Length: 111
Length: 118
Image (cartoon, rainbow over all chains, first blue to last red; front, side):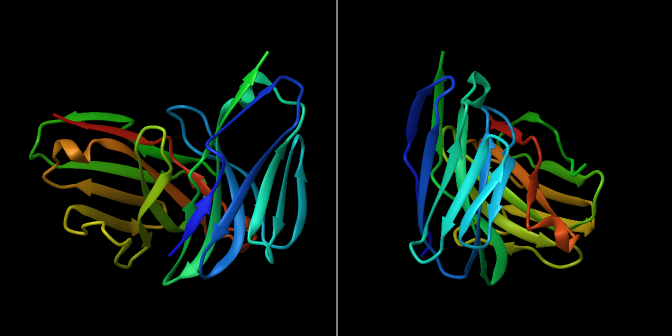
């Protein structure tokens, strides 16, 4: 079966740095994405890693280690608007090409 | 670019009726569209994958006769919840993946449809 694990909740203050980890056990893995979702809203794409290493996009960076079945999302210079749920999602090719989402991490940023 | 429109955003219906939800990619062609279901404060659960012009592939445990999916064109997929019951009340979200191979397998999500069955 497929399983992904993330911490359920993380809290931090404005300006801080936060790392959200994701470990996975899947068949047919070929990439890891991160999505942000505000309450009642649509998930929005943040980053995608197909190869090992770090991808940087502005204040957000994402890391993947395929050998460890592990990745993380790093959020820097936190702002209040970053308070949201963050999901890692594995890309798998197993019968169909699809995304399987993790359990989600709720980030609360305090002033 | 890469906008996905989902309609309606909110619907209330009586038990036993059917509800159709539309998902459109507005500025790109989508080879594949996906339908998810999300309960409050939980993850997105993939229901089915649909490719234009072919039958949808349903995830294990999802009733294909209950959740009818049609993907008639490269920009439109519909989900029909047939004979809806209160336990079908949920947040349904569609996503679309672009035909462009440079799109890095990004899925673009609609704003979701909140279904309440009375």
